Image (cartoon, rainbow, N blue to C red):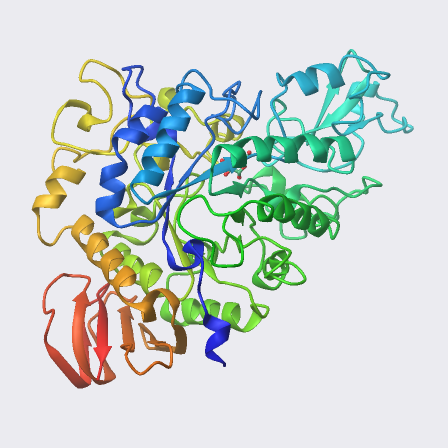
Length: 557
Ligand code: GLC
């Protein structure tokens, strides 16, 4: 492949994205919930860690039924998190330190308290009547049931139960892909599009560096509201949403048109920091849970011009943690990427069990090396750099509506949203000593916090800092090609290949994703980093022995 295909000119290609869940990062006002001033106070930590951009989950005014993913005003800040001035101060401080800021935008649905929905439900004649997806009750069958029981079709909510709720006033159902407090906007209505694009411009004008678009693949639904086919393998233990296959309410082809429009909104803006260097200076990221062949369509017809810059690739989260399976994902993804598309990988987020709990503490170290040595933009989740694990949540501590609606089905997302662990002091420095954090702290915070791990030369935090520094330092790691992705027994191996300027280093990555020691062949080189943080600088060649869960980064030559 030509080197030009790998050319990375934009910060969102060469950089690393760090997700902050604002409720859980740093509280400054003592209410036990994190806030924007807290993020500002911790920017130096992010700079020291070595990331390039911070993606902040929603902080807009919200009814908080889904903790910010139910927006009541797309152009403000919820008092819980601070003020618009606090946001401007955060953005200015971040930019002054060389950090980008990406907002989480929620275009698929608003809160049912949003003035748009309040108006839309007020009558069948009001101007905003078609801003949401309203539908009459299904016609009565022979087993006559009242209209409120006759849902228009069999679509299910991602948070349990039918995706339709009856509105007494309007005598119609409205669609909600998530909670009934999160009605879906009607993206076939040009006024809705214009209103959302105006809200995006509000933030772009203030200088934000891009958006992570919530559930981008769900925006458009079948215009005839056809029933979904039943899921032949539904077993009753799975979540309600799995009862049917999402043929008619997800990944509709018209979604691509909207993605292109969103991209055009962003591409009208120049860079926020530094000089323009062509291409997109503000980034469009899409939250998209789809198989790879469908996912890559979200790069658009001409990735340099149209689709999402980074359609989030969640396949490292969803794939069995084994060398052959992961090698397969990387190879298939690379093969499927359209020309001009830039890859990306995500290892964790606020909707998924913590990495360390999914695969274990030792393997989480190998995963860190994998994420930060692959070709493509890495996105990491706050606290993963400390090896944070899921926190046990007692029934009375449950906050997540997904868990409340479908208890015991493993939906609960509270375990991965526990407060960031900063120091060995009460409440781990997350909030004031006398405050009560909104979710419990992870056990062991007294020693496994950022300050304590900074002092321990072999800690997870030190490993992350070293990996991030190496990725930044070496063009090959952030912009080079990837080659020879293979599984050799339990070992996942690939090479990173420098640009053809004769000066860059090539790297061999070897990751033992199994539990047992393994020995594999390796070309001659010098160990630059091991995930156990021992043995750096040693020469290898011929064969190397790797502990279970260990990873090696070797500079070849
Ligand atoms: C996305 C968010 C998730 C939220 C849902 C509904 O999947 O990541 O946290 O609950 O959308 O907005």
